[in-house]
Amino acid sequence: MTDDTLRMLRDSAADFATFDASRVRRLRGTDPGFERMVWQQMAEMGWLGALIPEELGGLGLGAGAMTIIAEQLGHALYPEPYSASAVAATLALLHGDNAALKQDLLPRLAAGEIIASLAWQNERGGLSLDQCAANLSEQGGKSVLQGASRFVAAPGADAFIVAARSARGLELYWIERDAPGLSRASELRADGSASAHLQFAAVAAPVRARIASAAAANAALAVALDHALLATSAELLGLMNCALEMTLDYLRTRVQFGKPIGSFQALQHRAVDMYIQRELTRATLTAAVAVLDEPGCTPARRAAAASSAKARASQAALAICKEALQMHGAIGYTDEYDLGLYFNRALVLCAALGNAGAHRSRYASLTPLP
Image 1 (cartoon, helix red, strand yellow):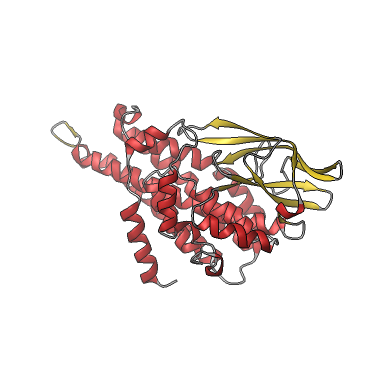
Image 2 (cartoon, helix red, strand yellow):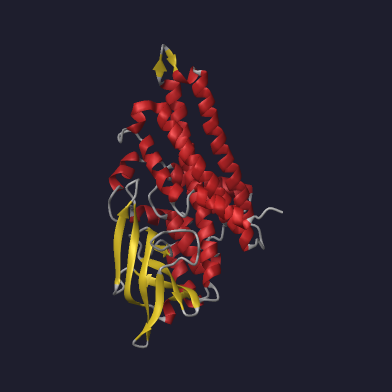
């Protein structure tokens, strides 16, 4: 993509996704927690098909475009499951080896007709692809799913891409939300959104619903998760940028001892520290995007770049939001003040798909010392 194309995308994203505190508060604790109408508008702008090839109904724009969209959604605190559906679930399907399902489902995902979410973590969570808790077995001559999957984003999704362990290895299956034997329990998170805890009791998993066989599932899941990490990091960048802007505005307008508190050198130093954290995150994210968009990038390099971005973004977002609360004083802790919305979303996104410590460990394991 050219710089002009990316600039136009950034401008259109900024025009569309604007912060609406009343909408954020209204959707907290609701099911599904987002608005289908807004999701459809995002589809009409081409955002949901940014990573889908043109021949399958998308735009084929790459990781750079994906992070621009995600950053603006984070800045505006949009609750729509962009990273979960338009990134993770979409790429898992795209990199599977079921051509018929791709032809059928990817255009519908790009058009916003259906929303999918990836279900792969067990009760404890974690980053290993081997930790899925769902199993595929044979009952009465049919393949069925047993077990559970936790921390599934977008409980209100129309379907789930379920990672299951079979005798052949890891496989991915497309399971409709109303499939017999599938039960869903929502688990409330700090910002009022929810994740799903799925239970599988002999849920039918026919071959035609298999997105990725054992030959392709690990690679498909890895690509999907690494891109989702980058998208989440971009959301955190947008979020911390807005928290910093709110803090600087407050320092300019809050008067103490007859002058704006932003004139106090101690607070200026703390504001500079916040700025540095944001810029370090932006630089790390830019470097990671270049790696993921690089033709022939190895899985190890891609994973290391994704973990680098997520570790930096998670650490910086928490540091900036905590500092912002302290510099605002008591007003920052009230639910009526919008800064709290950003802090609570940061708590959720920093933990999603692994916190800073988990990704520093993953990065270290992927980049051994010479």
